Length: 406
Image (cartoon, rainbow, N blue to C red; front, side, top):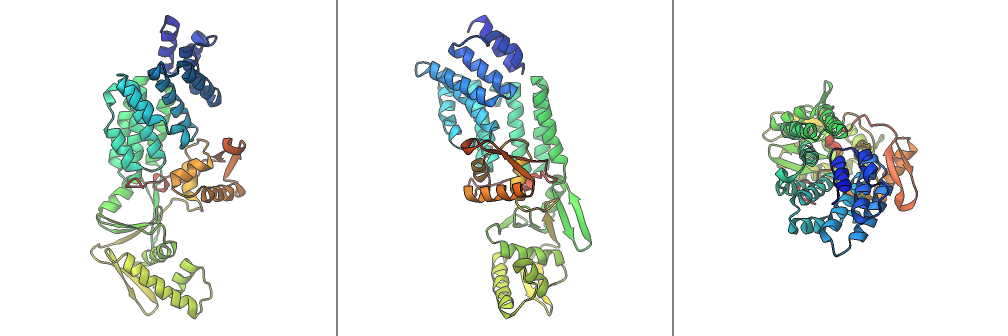
C-alpha cells in the first residue's frame, strides 16, 4: 500500500475513522474502497459501509483472494452488528480459511473471533468455547483481544460462572486500555455492569430476595434442588432436567417449590397450571395425570407425595429447595433480554437466537409492540426491532444457552 493507505489503515486501527477518510475519501481503487467502508462502519453508517466493502470485494476479485477475504470478514462484522445472523455470515468460515492459508494470521484470528461472537449470540455455547480455544490470541490486535474476552465473559455468564466472567472482563479491560478506543472501553464497562446487575429473584415462603449472578452460582453449588424459572429447568448437584417444552409440568413444579416444605393445595395447583378457578372432576383427573408425569420427570432429584390438601415436594438428597425467577417477570422475557443489548434485531435473527420458528418470534414482537415495549422500523427484509426502553431485567439467565450445540 502507498503512504496514504498506510496512514488511513493506522488511523482505523486506532479508532479514528475521520482521520482515515481524510486520506482516502476521494479514491475509488479497491484498497481505498475497503478502508472507506471500514471507516463508515466505525462511524455507524452501516448501509454505506456494506456498499463500499462489497464494491471493494468485487474489485479485488478472484485474482486477489486474500484482500477479498479481508473484505468479507469486514462485511461479516457489519452483519453481526446489524444482527443479520444467517446468510450474510455463511462465508465467514471460507474467508477465515483463505486468510490462514495465505499467512494472514491476525485477520484469520479476527474472523475466528467473529464466528465465536456469532455463536454466542445464538446461544451455541459449546461451539463458541471451542472456537475461542482454537484461536491464536497472541496474533490479535488489542481491540480484537478485548472482543474475544467479552465473548468469553458472555459464555461464562450464560453458564452461570461468575468468577470466570469477572476474570475475562479484567482481561478485556486491559486489552481495551491497550487499544485506546473509548467506545470499546464503554462496551467492556457495560458488560461489567450487566454482571453486577440483578440476575434473578429467590422466591421463598417469607418473601423474595434479589440475587446477583455470584449468588445464583453459589446457590446452585450448595446442592439445593433449584427450580429455575428463568430457563424452565430444575437443577440438583450435577443433574439438570429441562422442562422447557413441558410448561404445565414446570408450572406445577414451581408452585410445589414455592410451597416447600409445606404442601401445595390442589386448588393452588389447578389455578397455576390450568388457570382453573372453579375446578371440576375433569380438572382434578387431569391434575392427577400431570402430577404423575411430573413425578416421573423429576424422579432423579425429588419425589412428590400426596397430602390431604394436595401434594408436597420432597428432595431425595438435597437439604433445601429453591425457586429462581427473573428479577421482573414479563411475557416474552427472552426476547426483551436480547433486545436489551441496544442493537436493532431482525425477527429472523431473534428466531435463530431463541431457537424458535420465525412465526413464533414475530408473534412475540407483535405482542411487545402492542404493549409499547418494542418498536419497529424499516420495511420488508430491512425491518428491524428495538426495545423502546432498556428492560428492567437484562439478565444473562434469560439469554439463550443451548448447551450442546443444539
